[in-house]
Length: 193
Image 1 (cartoon, helix red, strand yellow):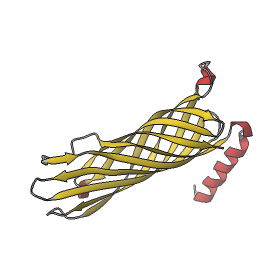
Image 2 (image 1 turned 90 degrees about the vertical axis):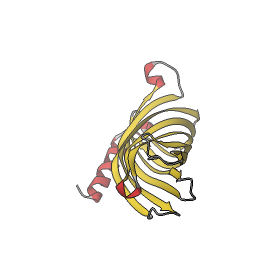
Image 3 (image 1 turned 30 degrees about the horizontal axis):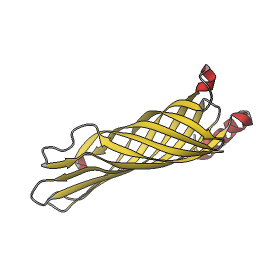
């Protein structure tokens, strides 16, 4: 299916759903990213986590199903120091497309405002290694799967907050010295329309 047919299909689906069930949103989140596997390989000083931030747009076709596009900056996923003045930094950023499945608590009789959700889809990431030592600078790209879960609370009609856990599968590559799963714990704000 080419891009124009896919876009026409999405527009058609959006128009077929009652207007009251549709919701467009913009948001941003900040949190912590961490490589799950030990990527330090015997370094004297090694840090496998950093501050992560993201921005996203989404569209809920119904109260239960939607699509979300995000940009994720993982920060310095790996920072090493061999104790002799040689340091290495690995920075990663990614774009992802997710299918969102949501369950508003009001649908199961637990009150208004809260929504639990899961999401899954694909990401494309670019990882860059820079070093002031003997390790050569390198870049690696990754296309893999990601998934996550979260809880959202609608504070006001057009403002929501959320807490989220995401897992990015097999990020990195041999050119940058590691390949591993990265988890991100974050919180953020959504503007809903």
